[in-house]
Length: 271
Image 1 (tube, rainbow, N blue to C red):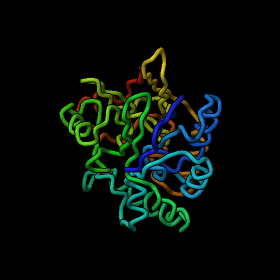
Image 2: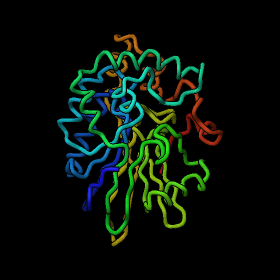
Image 3: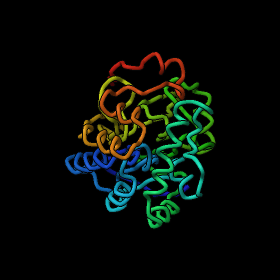
Image 4: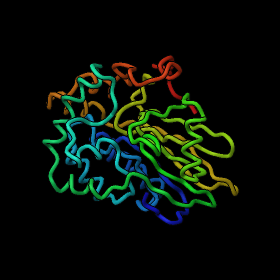
C-alpha cells in the first residue's frame, strides 16, 4: 500500500489501458481539457493488455507521470509469469486468446518497461476531503478477483473493513459501475482500452470532485480512432475477437460475467 497523503481538487480515475495507445492519447487530451494535473490522475492497473502497442503505451504512460497500481498483467509480466493471471476459465475462449496476446506483450516490452512495472504498488491510499480512499485492482485480497455491480455487498464490505476505507476505487472487471451502501462507495471507473460490452464503441473513466461540500463523482465515456487500433491488431495477428470488440462494443463471450451483467450485454450504458 503506497500512501499519497492528501489530494485536493478534481480527480480523474481510469483503468485497463490494455496497450491501446490511441485511447490513452485521447484520455490525455481530455484530462488537459478538464484541467486535471497528472498528480490527480489515478490508474487502476492493466496498462498492458490485448492491443498492439504495449511498449509505446507504457512509454507514453510513464511520460504522463500519473499515479498507478499494478494490475494482474503488470504483476505477471514483472514476475515472468507464463500467463496474464486474469483467472480466465480453464479451456475457455479468453484463456485461448491470452495465449496469443500475452506472449506478444512479453516479446514487445523492453526490459526498462518491465523494470518500471516493478515500481508499481499493489494498492494506493490517500485522503480526499475527509474520506479515506483505497485503490485496488480486483479486490484488496486478490488482484484478479472480479467484483461487479451485482457482487453481494457483504463481499465488498469486508474490503472496506480491512482497509478502513470510505471509498474503494477498483478495476479489473472491465465494466464501469458504482455501489453505495452504509456511507461507503465502491467505484469502478471502467476501462479505456476496450468497450464495456454495451454495443457501443465507448470506453469509460470517472471524474471525482467536491461540489457544494460533498464528494461528487461522474462516469464519463469517449470514443477514439478504434478503426486504426483494430487494424494494428489485425496486422500483428492478435485476437480478431478483441479487435472486433473495439468496433462493435460487444465482447466475444461472457465467461467472466455474473448473470445480471450477462443479461445486459448490448444494452447501452447510461448513468
